[in-house]
Image (cartoon, rainbow over all chains, first blue to last red; front, side, top):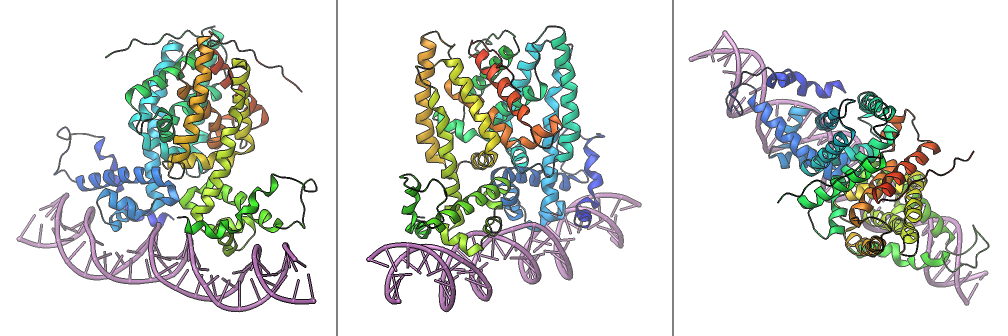
Length: 240
Length: 240
DNA sequence: ATTAAATTTGACCAATCGGTCAGGTTTTGC
DNA sequence: GCAAAACCTGACCGATTGGTCAAATTTAAT
């Protein structure tokens, strides 16, 4: 199996290149390795879309290549196997998942922190619905490629946040709640607007959800979560 | 498209047989059509599992046949095409989806009706997780086979329930709420425990969720929904 | 300028896919 | 008991799949 990855990883050492920057500020069309960077990005974006809409098995390397505007053999040149490409797409996504939770700390105000987190997650569902769909597909299929992430990174992160919630509860700042269920509900409700967009769209009578729909969704979720924890909820001022 | 269904529907008229009952109370091994009934049920159950875990494209008729304990040609004998089989599986599931909403009527008590509905949906996620996964897959893929259901049956049902919620709100029995978002949140949160079971399992540290996990999930959701609508929530008595 | 490394790609392959079919067996209706 | 209908299934097929490869071209470093 590692054989199949050799070709893709031979020059993979160049991947960290964009970290130690001395670059001219953005897109340098002549810098060494720019071809690899551009084509990998093209392929990853195309793969995310095809994996999201077709599932792992339904996605074909030919379809990904076509969407990226490259010949199929080129996709295999950069990523070796379809599985390795899928893994790379997932890796990109898992990074996003862990980010936004930073604002939930013992020092922060519970209502503000949770409300901001929910709004950020909804924004996420709106801006990167394909990532959410790929992740949902992966979970439904049993998290074959994500078991370790769930059992290690995600679990310890939730344990971390559980300590915050317990501290808040002990200080009487929120009512006690099982953190696993709280986050499950928040994740489910927010990601629903990406994964089931077509269903929500049919219910509101619009093919695509509008900005107002996402805002209303976020506020409804915030309201239920805050009230559920014994907190007050006040709707933010409209702006327009 | 109807051509592909012909073979499966030739004797499909026998499907309603189990409605007008005069049967001996359960399994009649000699009644006419019992072979068709048994084999169709075997295939549908196997198909639900394979479609749930592999997605539409990932599911193979050979895998479904193997899981049903029948030769592949037999699957095609009963259902014609893979697409027709998928359609039949979906049809089974859509029936389940519309059922439980009956308890939400203008006459019923809001807190009781909503709490019972949420608990029923969680029970559903526990007892028929595969159905939920097939449906989730279908939504993520853009509801290619379910567009009409969403735009007609489901939408009019939600409109119906919207009238109930509006009436409740007008009578001061709940706070006003957008029904689409309320149901979206309830569906997302409850179905999450089927579709993302592997994730929740990793977070609670159990491979499979226990009865207690589902109960706690239901109560957490009920608490947030009821409080979100300005209702009181009181935890039910433990038993055992 | 030279050369090594990286990139490109059409052609190709074995495996698997959904679906078909002929010919046999079993079940059913009378 | 008998004909018709329903059921069964191994063998087969064209299409598609993920993946390979060798030969050609472009880019990079000295």
